[in-house]
Amino acid sequence: MSEPAPDPGPGPAEDLIYHHAPGTRVTYRARQRGLDLTAWLRIALHLPGFLLSLALVAAAALTLEAWTGLSAWATVALWAGSGALVFHRPTEERIARHLLRLHRPLPHERAVLDPVWREVTARAGVEGGRYQLWIEDSEDLNALAAAGHIVGVTRYALERLPRSQLAAVLAHELGHHIGGHAWAGLLGQWYGLPARSAWRALARVRVPAARAVSPTTVLAITAVAAYLAYRTLTATYGLPLLLLALPWLAAAVGRWAELRADAHAAGLGFAPMLTELLHRSLSEGETEAEESRLLDRLLSSHPDHRTRIHHLQPYLNRETPQGGHPLG
Image: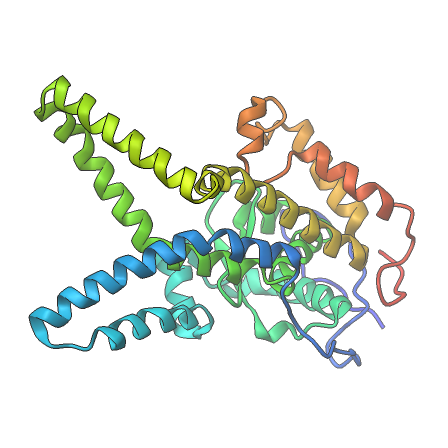
């Protein structure tokens, strides 16, 4: 049973066959989401920042307790439990509106999105109503998965992409949610916020403070810091040096997560559409990663388009998506 798509207006013509119209029987997966290896690695890489943030919050809580009598344990416990707001729907809506600058789809936008999203989630065996669809007013080709249930696409993707490529983009973002990438990344950012804020504050006062003291004092402070660093590295067998590698490791895990999301979309039968979209981006020059320096590419959280196309090649020989439905 198929369902005609809504009139796309001035956008691309209909090119996606819908196998899961309203009322069609859909088999849902027993596990709607989980944590894949990249999500676990992302959580592990955020652990040093979390521990530093915990120490800062504990110190602030102890100070607050001394001034006001408010239990330090209660303050720390409240902060530790605040990450659950990632899955709190009203909080997610505020994140979408005020941090990500998204808005709810208008009726004509929903008329385009809903059948495509229904097809993608049905192929994945996922209950699509669990997620919230949002629109970003942007002329860039982009999409995002955030918090526990946010899936956003740009106006460009909605209005300019053929339906099959829009479905591939949505399947990619659904892969981030199913793999746990979206909420693991946001939790890491949230729990690392005190540590990052303290570092930024320190950076602001470091330069003026250095200018206010004599060169001899700066040299003495540098020598003491170097000695303490040496003693620390000796006592811990150089383990703190791993902190220097965190940005590189985090970027590598981010690139791996993107490839896993691509694999999720490809496993649902969208490999040809996603490959075509990546080739289109290359031809239109929408990415600068291809010409960037090696250092920039190693610190990028997204693989370059040619790498993504290479990893999609094994899926291009498959004629049917997961579930045995022919592609349109």
